[in-house]
Length: 196
Image (cartoon, rainbow, N blue to C red):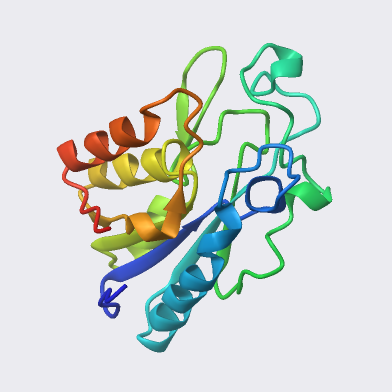
């Protein structure tokens, strides 16, 4: 992608898990598996330049208000300790894993989780890790562009980070037609760079 890694830059790999990135996964994102080779190239480039790589991982309990079975909007997915929650076997793991949704919260952003009933937000450890590493810029890749990638990118901007989301390295759910365009527009409005 031509991304320049090095001091102050981190790569965030979002939710490249079997339920999202594997045909037949419970919440398969169309084309999710197609980005893995490109993501692995980014991981290698970041590692070669000494940039940290962080991976977000949905890690839901079997019952949560996040799921349609308990009043939410999503089919059950990425239930902890199941094959669907595992990272896609093609993804190179070369950094810390940040689990989200572990207590039944909505875990869209790698930076924060939200109580599905009260809407109260709480932080994951990612912001602390980036601050400790003097990170000022992040590249966000993975799934899905209109949910977890979008929310991670917006949270990163809120924290004052420069953010790049290479569109070639994400795919979109598009529950409603036009979600992709709306997500890209929101990122651009927030100051996220979105190279094709």
